[in-house]
Image (cartoon, rainbow, N blue to C red):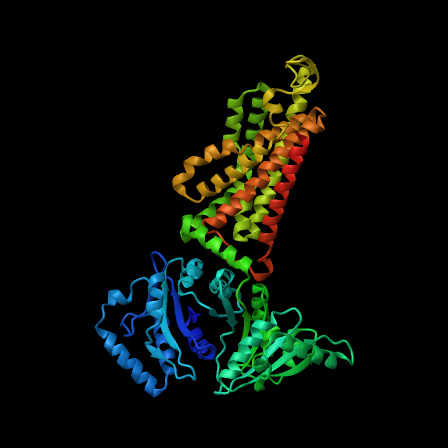
Length: 595
């Protein structure tokens, strides 16, 4: 069993390594310490040589000192002897990239042995690359870890943005995880653990972690059940519930490790404040929710309440089968689809955000595109309508909505959505005004009317309102229109992310007809034909929904993912994608019913 400890700051290594050693020793496993650092070039995982090099970074030096300071004298001598034996090896061989076939060979040989009840192998690795934070989970999967120990993000906004790699990692890592606050730690050989229990938590993961620790080090464990204040019965009810949770979760041997305790409180910070914090070395909380993990550790009241406890950690067990399947699928997509580099992602977001603004340029282009489309529809000219599609700027803000959903960028999503809706209203208004003007000119005999009450068909004349063929074709959307729009959204998103494919965007604009349906709808509304106007409007909605869905999925596939959003906003992109999928199904049903 391999446990990985990931830290990108020297303080994290010094403070968390002692806990990592004890947790790994309690599980009789091996420890791999991963040191991520930003370097130019492709992201790669390399094994650090046993002998320290002159040009090593501060992080690597701190890791070596922290590991060696944890050794007993005999273990240190053994490590030095082993390092001296490896001194003749080629530096290039030591620094080569780690592949999945080399993992077992790299982990198995013990270079440094900790003085723990259960011998634990420790190896140091560097994850080097310009974009290591987004590819961290992919490279760590090569080690096949059973547990990942990750330092909790700092509390300040500046540090939280720098440490946002924790969220990316924990979202994609396919194993049990422990998010631990990296305060300075000091504890005796006998570890004292407090495990917080509640009905809404994942108690099994934290209880088993606590039981393993105290069993390995002959420590003490307290199961603290937080019971709301329901009156004088709160304590006995909470005790019965606490004992029931322990019996249902643990084996007989594990159950003997815990002493149940009830704290009557309404909030975790209030419950923690009632504990004698100096009586514990580690406070554990279990949850299956990443948001709850970060929320608990970043809560200032909780931080103040636990200030005298050396370590506070949140345990999350490995993902369910469905999440594992989703992560495998996500990994396959990443390996198959070329990923955008960091600079390409920055350029893409900046380009789309600036082009999605409601400004004079956008207003002028949407107005001219709609007018050209109206003229093309009136003349029944496909070539003119194609020209309107090329001028129309609506594709960019609609793609911006998809990018905002993929990136969990609420600001971009709102800006792009407002621009798209204003462009929609502008196009409809121009279509209505154009239709009214044509009707007025037709009444004065200057122009032919756009609609006719008599139309020749194969079965003879047909009486009813009839518009030019180019308009009629857009008033009865088909299921194929939905597929065309979805494919157009996929093509647009992929082409937007790669400058060498910009030449494909005009073709995408032609395929994804956005302005002509709006112009058609406005003209039909001006003639009082709400049914046909609604049909053309349905075509636009079909195109817009499926383009957003297609672009958001493709942007995620090429590497655009949530990195800067806080935990409170982590779920809305998923809900938005689900809503888009439901709307696509609903539109399909409506189209089939209409036809």
